[in-house]
Image 1 (cartoon, rainbow, N blue to C red):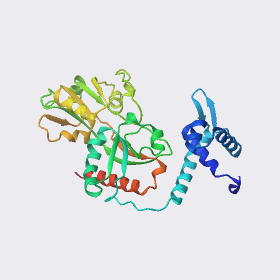
Image 2: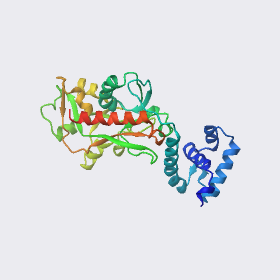
Image 3: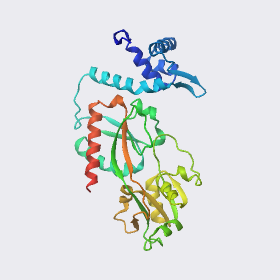
Image 4: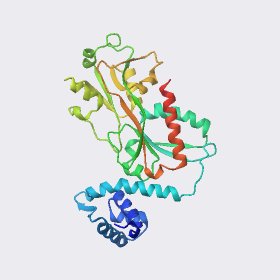
Length: 314
């Protein structure tokens, strides 16, 4: 293939087609007619000698070749877009930009609480629009409609940029009046009643089946390896709710240690190390290639990394 004979517009077409999974939506995105987009897809198929998108019961499904091409083309177009943009500096002290960040309340109450203090001093007119994971899809982030996603992710699309913000261990939180506060061991842990709390990834969650232990996450996965299972009475997606319930009820919350620190000075709460090993979790930030070279976005990512590093020494 002679690259000089390739219409680069076709790469733009393919990028949008693979993101939208629909000729109609891709045409609307590029403000062209559906026949023009269909013709573009035909030319792409001829160019790559591959169908690229195949109609299935799930809609237009990308082929293996298309999935291999997608991150390469996105990277090429992102670099090209960045190079032809007029170069402008980002001035945080005077900027009134709004950054939309998808995050769980775990990151809100730990990382972002510290970040707000920095922003107040360095960029007082910047606004953060914090969105819950249930309100956002991978597509929203990929399109740059959401600046960043901060959460624990089992997996992320290859087209995303990502960075580990920190690793966190687990702690057990309970009321100071809990019977196990003075007699803490694995046997007691298993005899107690518990609060389950988690919200990872993107999208709307579904109800939990307590019997599907393999789907309950890190804590219960480790107990399963020991041939044990805890008695979960409350399922929640909110860390603050779990902490408040643990403080006022005879229930134990096993959650990331940085979230447990919220109650470190509360005399009504006891924080213990789990009586079994749980691997650390990674809090990550992920963002679209479309924003990777944006000056304001780069500044915010560096500031978040700085806040995370400072908090590690607290």
